[in-house]
Length: 325
Image (tube, rainbow, N blue to C red; front, side, top):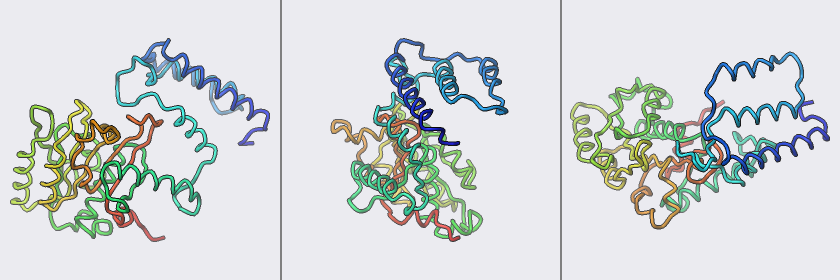
């Protein structure tokens, strides 16, 4: 049986809680980085050939011990690698709860409470960024890369209303977008996925603070317009991956609007500054963005992955993704 018998389930849940508590309590006493031996890992996995059933508790213990041995431990107090802190206790509990209930939110009627939790949180985050009440729409996603891809599709749909049906061949010109040289590589990948190619991406030089040079941005946009290209998306980064630099958001937004382009703020990393009054000024102008990327699995300590796409255009997601079946 998929759900196992009740006594087995009870032992499994108890053991799972013991493993999690032991890990949280003792992770600081171990090493931060894992053993790096693919041969050892593959040898351990050979025992699982899927020809015979495995005891659930043994399988759980095997997975836990292997993760301890072969994983960089982000909850470790000496971990200073990427931007993923120790998950909050309530985040761990929420992950377990969601796995048990398995809500299907592709259709609102299937899990209306979960769907409205998503909507409620998107509105709350939007308000923190400065979006007016009643104007925020959004969706949770796997992380910043997916949110940035969503932003590019929304920008194309906004600038070219026929894009969703006719694609890039019917746009009447070369669409171009603008990011800083320090922006996240997900925009280059999204340009490929959208059929634009990386040749449509303009990587703008940065200043001595590693933030986008707005003079260079204006020059590049003017050059493209003169060449007959069509600026459709301008991106400001609030917290670059390499240095944490924050682009001049308000100034970039003004340039984007004057060019008739969608203005997106990638605040996947730095967006949590909106919650701290002493830091909020760094994000000035974000509330004027057409869309925002934010990652809750960074400063908010949600388990991976918890990205958010926010927009102040309540109809754009429907226009971008709606299909009729």
